[in-house]
Structure formats: C-alpha cells, structure tokens
Amino acid sequence: MKHDVIAVIDFGGQYAHLIATKVRRAAKVLAEIRQPEDPVSAFAGCKGVIMSGSPSLASFGEDSDWNKAILDLDVPILGFCFGHQEIAKHYGGTVIHGRQEWGRADLHLTEEHPLFKGLGPVETVWMSHFDSVTAVGPGFRELGWSVLGANAEPHRFAAIADDTRRRYGFQYHPEVDDSVHGDEMIANFVLEICGCRPTWTMERYVEEQVEKIRAQVGDRSVFLLASGGVDSTVAARLFVEALGPERLELLHVDNGLMRKDESRLVVEMFRDMGLGEHLHFIDATDTFLASLAGKIEPEAKRRAIGDTFISVFESEARRLGITGHLLGQGTIYPDTIETGGTKRADTIKTHHNRVPIIEEMIKAGKVIEPLADLYKVEVRELGEKLGIPHDMIWRHPFPGPGLGVRLLCSDGSAGDADALGKITPAVQAAAAPYGLQAMPLPIRSVGVKADLRTYEHPVLLHAPAATDGGEYDWDALAEASGTIFKTVGGLNRSLLLLGEGLPKQCRTLAAQMTRDRLELLRECDDIMMSALRRHGLYDQVWQCPTVLVPLEVDGRGRELCIVRPILSERAMTATAARLPRRLLDEVRAQTIALTEISAVAYDLTSKPPGTIEWE
Ligand code: XMP
Image 1 (spheres, protein in one colour):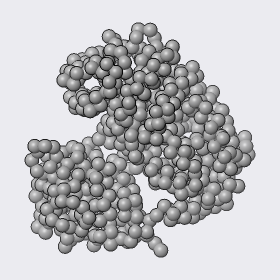
Image 2 (tube, helix red, strand yellow; image 1 turned 90 degrees about the vertical axis):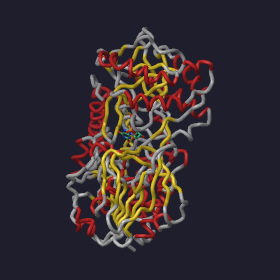
Image 3 (cartoon, rainbow, N blue to C red; image 1 turned 60 degrees about the vertical axis):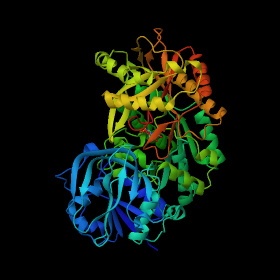
Image 4 (cartoon, helix red, strand yellow; image 1 turned 120 degrees about the vertical axis):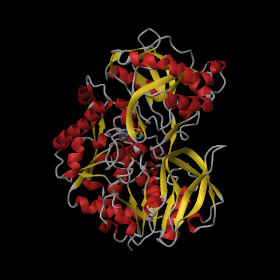
C-alpha cells in the first residue's frame, strides 16, 4: 500500500522539515518537502499542502516570486505564519508590517472546527512574526484570536478558514514544541481535513530504508565512518539489517579530538554488538593536529577536520584493500540544514560530514546516508526498534569534530578590544537592574539569530548576591541575558562566572590546538560529565559541551573553562539546563584545581541566539 502524501512548501529556515516531521509523528502520514517555485505538477497526487513560515530576515515580502498557481490546486491548503499571511493576502485580506509578536500566546477559539477537534477553548501557541493579518477577504472567517502578555491588545485573525475553498491559516507555529497542542492541530488538518490514512510507522520506515539501501548499494559494499555516537551506530545496525555484516566495513578514527577513553569504549561497544571482525581502527591524531595547525576561525577548523576524515578514510580503504564501496555516514537532518544544505538555509556551521569534498562525493553517488531525513529523537526511536542497548542510544550527542570545536584557539592579538570598551557601559547598565555585574569578553563564538549565522562576543555575568552559596536566580539571569542581547548589539552568548567576582581586565592568550591543551580539555570535560553522573542528572541533560577558552582572567596566563549543559529535543533549539549549586561548586573546585585553569563559567545562552557548540 502506498502512503498518502502531504506536501510541505519550504519558505526557508528550519520550519518545513520540522513540519514534515510533525506530520509523520503526529498524524503518521508521509510528508515531502517542495520548493515555492516548483511547478504545480510537483504536487500531483498529494492530498494536502502546508505552507511553512519564513525566517524574518530572509522573508519573501511583497515581490515574492513563489508560484501562486499552487493555490489553485484542488486540495486543502494550510499556511503557518508567513504561509498564513500569503493565503490571507491572496484571497483579498490585508497584511500589515510591524504588528509583531514573539513568544507564547493564548489562542482563543471562536467556534468549534475540525482543525481544533479535541482541544479546549483557549490553547497555548508560539508566535514569532513581524507581519500580521488585519482583515480577511470574502469567504474567510476568523476561527481564533490571540493575546500575548498580560495587558496586550487581542491580536485578530490568529486562525482563519474558508471551508468552501478549503484554505486555512495559523499565525502561530504549531510545529514548534511551545505550541502545546500543535501536534494535534497538525494531525487534525492532515487526518480530518485532508482525509489522509495514517500509515507511516517506524517499522515501515525500517522496511523502506532496507529496500532503498539494497537498491543503492547493489552488489557493492559500505565502508562506514563509525564514531561510536548514536547516529553512526544506528546507521551501522541498519546497514547490517539491509546487507548483512559481510558487506559492511566499519572504520573508527581516533582523531585526537575524542573524549577521555572514548576510542577504547567505542571499539569495545562494536565488539559487543558482534561487529568486531569488521571494525578497523586507526589513531590519526598527528594527521588531524597537523591539519589544524595555525587555524583559528571555526569554519576553517571544521573544514580541516572534515577533509582530514576523508583523506584518512581513503588511505585506510587503500591500505585495507577495500574497493568498490560506498562511503557510509550517520548524517542526520540537522547536519544538512546547519551546513546550509537546503535551498534557503544560511550556513551556520559546516558539519564534518558536509564539507565540500563530501558534497562532491554525494553528487557522484558515492555516499550513502540512511538517516539524513531524521532528527535525533527519531534516530533514537529507530535505534530502539533495531535493538541497540538503551545506554548507547541515550548517550549524549557528541559532534564529529569533537573537542576540535570546543577548544578555542587564538593568535593572542587584542582583536576588537576598542569596540568592546565602547559597549561596556551599555552592557553594565543593562545588567545592573538585575543586581548583576557584566563585561563583554574579547573572544568570539558562533551563534544563530533569525536563522542566520553570527560570530560574536559573549558577555560575562557575575551575581554578587549568590556568593552566600544559595541557588542561582536562573530566571533573573535569563531575563538579564535577554535584556542585554536586546539592548546591545554584537553579543550572542551570556556566561555566568562561578565563584569569584569579575576580573578587572582580561586578555586573550596565544593558543593553538595542541596535545597538551586537548589533554587539559579532556580532564575538564571528564570532571563535568562525572559530576552529572554522580548527581544522577546525566539523563536529564540533553548534551553538555565543555569548552576551553584562551582567556586570561587572573593575570597569570591560565585559561577559562566553560560548561554548557543544555536541554533540547531536536538540537534546533535549546535552553540552558539549571543545575544545582552543589554540583556547580564541586565542578568549579575540581576544575580550578587543575593548575592551568583559572576560572569556570556556565553558559546560560539558549539557542537561538547561541548555538549548542561554540564553533
Ligand atoms: P549546534 O552547535 O549547531 O549543534 O547548535 C547542534 C547539534 O549538532 C551537533 N554538531 C555536530 N554533529 N557533526 C556532527 O555530527 C558536526 O560537525 C556537528 N556540529 C555540531 C552538536 O553537538 C549539537 O548536538
């Protein structure tokens, strides 16, 4: 039996894929992404269309060139945010610029409608828009209005419908987890309005992927880069399912950027999975460090690491006499989108499995990536279906470039110290009402704002009131960070200095990617990860990068260590985890006992505007 299909039009950013995932998971219906300029024929056979939102800065605007003939299709069409505004406009409504809303709002429904089947009269939804619908054309009516904030004016036309034409619009983003019953609304559209049959299941996904893998591989074999992380391990199991172990070879590369003891544990794990015979191991630390020598800029480091993976892989394939193979990778969907791999996405970070050499190999049909459509939550679900041990599946994600993107390097120059001096008073003024001291730091890290990459400075905060050993006031810290980002440009992260007061001044140190510094970072990371386990919090935290920054804050040439425990579901957004004071005090004490570390800070930044990794 063929699946029914919903087409999701990708107007930019991360939305379309998130919608497609929600259609699959909430309604168990297959969703496929289409482009706004696609001809109507590309929509043949689909049972409904969802038009995504669009990131504000890249908005399509008045002169948008999308193919409006799509609106003539004789199937139900539902728009979210930008899609909603385009539908309203097309059918004679009015959209104005500047009536913006950001955050959670209450949606008040004005009538019962199949789109809201099973839901209450007031629903929490997520708003993120500059433009608004202020009137609808003939045939349309308002299904709901919204209110955001205590004293705000009601926002009309938050949900609209024309049941005769079967055209609908939501101003909010039901695909975002903050829209509490967004999944139900999406499922109602797909099942109630479009009449799709719910046939998509993870079991069927496995069956379909197995077929696809067999078809793509033919009589060749797969040589898989196996980091030991969740993604490549699940990919390995899926390849075994499709091809049997005989046509799968695994290569685990110790790139010198792994966690403490990691490679040893990975090799053991593959042995336990019965794949030991097919696992090859190489310690390529020297090759990776040579490729990183002198590199400071995050993208340059990422490209060097990605390229070196391929050269090591190819030379190992030659050495082992493995020929006629495809390169297997555990690439998941966020890897492609953050690398700018979809039509309208900015390159936020080039993931190690998406460097130009690999893009070339993909074009030449030499790469196989059976998970490239999935988010981490789905990969984990798939892993459980395939019988991979629970502990393995629920390990924290660890990026391919490993500690390479957590060990900041610098040529030691003052950089834009003057510019920072100029914004310092504004930063201090924004932090003062919260009882916080603040200073911008002369280092930079990668972040994301309105779906675009940033490379900006962090602000370091200190909470003098917390020196009595009580819990930190996380709400005040989060609010202060938001105020600082809003009032002062050029900042994309906020850090809380644990313990002592703010330094009088700080200075960047000249520092490279060396074995010694990597060893130091491994120790810091091990302290933090052990603390999470000791306090029983490992499973509550989604991921926890530890970062080493060549920043002197004590006048003695020692570095700053930063811990970044976060909560997330799909890695596309994240918030800082709020850990108990006792754990943080222990981590700080153990970390500054390492003689090369002067201080420890806690990364408070949500994503956006920060990314999870620093580079
Ligand atoms: P960011 O830092 O972009 O990270 O918020 C999102 C998620 O992706 C992981 N990450 C990577 N994973 N190769 C990977 O396999 C990479 O190059 C890479 N860069 C980031 C990151 O750890 C987080 O889980």
